[in-house]
Image (cartoon, rainbow, N blue to C red; front, side, top):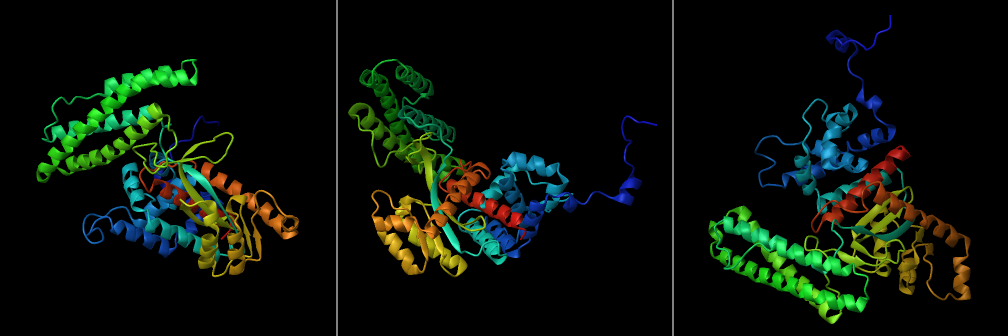
Length: 463
């Protein structure tokens, strides 16, 4: 007899046959990562970071999320490229992910809990996790440190496209909001204060319409002065009113709540940034000075830099420079935010490789941005046999013969794989544009991408 559907499973079937084994359903790569995360040093590092949240977190209070569960859920999030909400949803409804995160039939931590736990793992704690995974890769012979390649890339910060009018709009919106909050907390607002978001919005639309007119650049620059003059006058008035509010709040600081005090600190920070925004806007609009070393592109991410890397499809990027250092076997051995030019990073990179593996690599391969005669000499003195760093510009016959040698050409071909590695870090593990905000957001994003990449490389190797 053919039935339309199976009948309901009885309790007797569950007792006899039980539930399927989650380990048997787990994909092979994830199973090897599951075994790797059983390392006690990794769990202890997360435990120490969680205990440091409050003074008595390790001894008092109700039981929170275990360190092992927090580590595995954060690793799973970055392996799959999920958001915190998607992480909660997927782990709740998947038997394999429940087993991987060591939750089984327990309650899955919600998204807000995971956000707070993720914020605890930053700085030295996150760097310790990354270094421990590199040590495990070397211990399992996934890499032996015979080769090294290093390159830099840009990690974009979560900001919108910057313009002076939008920056003025952001400054006025934040300050008006915080002044109103301070007034609700009992702080007297300055005389004549009002929320100017509507008038600022009108100036913003006027500037946008003028920018779209099919007129010459000089005529457009002259036409933009009038709305920008009114916008700057409004912004300066809001800055003065916010300064007065901060002074009045300081007089009754002891009677303010914690939230009100945070609002006052926010106003102080935005007032300082707002002054810089007004100054750079005046220089660009009224004096035609567009270049400035201290130019700010976002009041929410003030560490964001304007980076021009010479790419045709994206000539200007807004973010921070990140160094990616790699050994053979697909293992990222170092990843960090840098501020120096590429030529100053080669010797410290080789020294870091020596600390990790106990010896210098046989081959060092980079692009021509790392070239300098001092770098070539210093790295050779360290004991590197083949330094494959192409020389930019004119090359002598002797230098051409060196670059045409077989070891140099092989090292240069291996270095080209670093571009694909960076692309994988960006597009598979989320390092293209960080989702984390704040001064350490880019660092957190880069380290988690490196951790996820190394775990997958170890799992694919079979270690």
